[in-house]
Length: 203
Ligand SMILES: CCCCC/C=C\CCCC/C=C/C(=O)SCCNC(=O)CCNC(=O)[C@H](O)C(C)(C)COP(=O)(O)OP(=O)(O)OC[C@H]1O[C@@H](n2cnc3c(N)ncnc32)[C@H](O)[C@@H]1OP(=O)(O)O
Figure 1 (cartoon, helix red, strand yellow):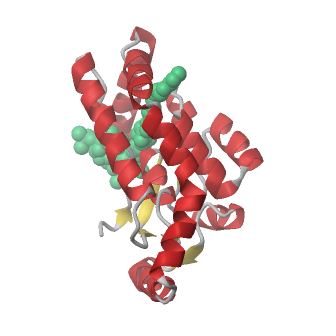
Figure 2 (cartoon, helix red, strand yellow; figure 1 turned 180 degrees about the vertical axis):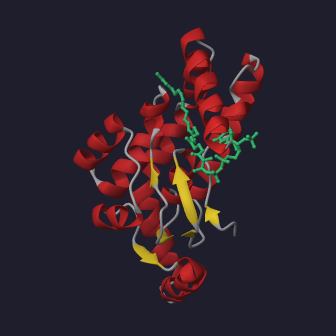
């Protein structure tokens, strides 16, 4: 577990100044990771040790339960702030987590929530001091593991199969949409400026 950062989201350098076949392969891998995690028969609990923007938020939402560290961290789907769009399955996952209305506001504004705000809207289930995040996640895991596995798994599948089947049937189209979108000159310019701004913030 890395302190302060759960995940900085997708590595933008994987779709900045890359060839279409490279961005295709990158997106296919992300789809694989998501489908495996969201559809996992195992109990999955995200111990969110710090920042969790965009793709990081998606990974956390793909789990069954989320524990987030308190502190000056943020979580959310901030794609619009970067001049890009959250794909339909990011949107559906967020709707399944916090509901339609909150998702609509959240996505259009590219909102990044503090841990307390995230807990209030149900984006995370629990907040804990940073040095206790793993402990809180473990405690919660014990509860989940007491439930008869077959019943929990079938329930999870009933709740999640619609989205899994939808994405599975549209994978090629989704890859095509991603690559044609990120290859646009205007999007490449936005991504370049954003990467520069991250580096400037650091120096
Ligand atoms: C019509 C159909 C449309 C279909 C769909 C089309 C399109 C697009 C969908 C794309 C979905 C995208 C999802 C994403 O996840 S995009 C990435 C979003 N992530 C972020 O915005 C986070 C950016 N990072 C930060 O805000 C901060 O780094 C931090 C996570 C808060 C941590 O801060 P700090 O500890 O101060 O770290 P540094 O800022 O110093 O960063 C260290 C170095 O890492 C570079 N960096 C950071 N994040 C990223 C990233 N996500 N990708 C690539 N590089 C990143 C940063 O520039 C520093 O680099 P350096 O060491 O070389 O200077």
